[in-house]
Image (tube, rainbow, N blue to C red; front, side, top):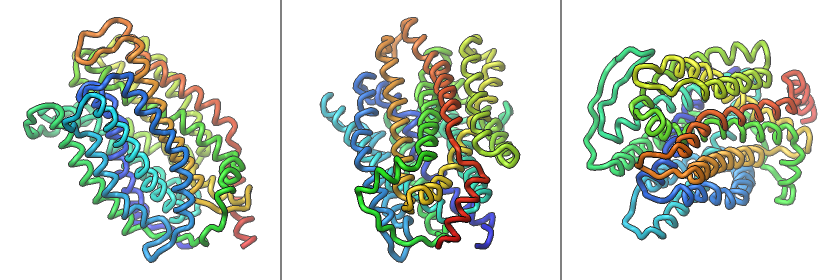
Length: 463
């Protein structure tokens, strides 16, 4: 098989920009939108995040089963991206809309839109990741793809969402900075209220996300040809439970995802209520841009020398340390936030190590599972991974909102000391503990590069 061209890596990887415009907007702001804009309690909002995943336990493996057995002229998995991109982003817009409903029906509306979003996201996200396993089977090319994907998903998208969404929604000037230097300032539209601002953001993101997903699917080629899978539904447990490296990697991904979901979910609360200056959030995420770029540059260099697993462990260790230390330094103010930002930049760079390695390791579990169980399936392992990712998002959202409710959080009021302490613990201590747990789980991951190459060679010789 010919090596991938840089253009081919770009065309596939940019799809993660489209997916994460949708995915990260929910992860960053849906909890805040539910409590402070939509007007439902933190307690109700927490159960929306949790209960939605009950259906996914059925929906996700079923979607993987359907995708594995599907073929048409557009490809193996790409049709689900074409069919799902528009509905996915229409539901995103619905999630950030406020219909005229009673208090009880508002809660029902949130349950419905969030659950439907999760179902469609499975179809699109699973299919996109599955295409990635068919673009190449070369580990180094997969590492390059993972790095490029995380550049779009984290460096670009999180910079946009963390730095510019809040001032846009609040009709404030949008200041573009890099390493503390102002580059340009935009004056966005003036909205009548915050709700209108959130709807406009969701609309813009939805349009861009849809266009990019269509582009990526159209320009990406499934170069690895695999036959239609003949396994039965009763084989699902064997495919998942028989793949021990998938189980370990999924557990580490659950914990790694919980770190940034909890942190991002409370970041707006942190800067609004703890620091007392909402505009610091914009400054903070603009400083994370160069940190994330450093992480993107360093990761492939480190993985080529140390291996993906060891770099993942190193990143988790540093993220743990940074979060614990940051909890005990002074709260950032408009005049003094250098130490806070500096520590955060180190942690953000190392989170890039974790994210890139995590997604670079996922495709390897496909061939390992085939070797271990005798059944080739892209859809089921990836759907399980997708389920665990969404479960982590829901658990983290539920956990954060439950802590806020337990500590007495009341939206748009002067918070009690217990509520402020809850936000601070959610922003630092709990993510640090999740990172430590992730590090421990990774010691049980046994698929080295040398072992993977042996397995792939054996599979190719048995064709």
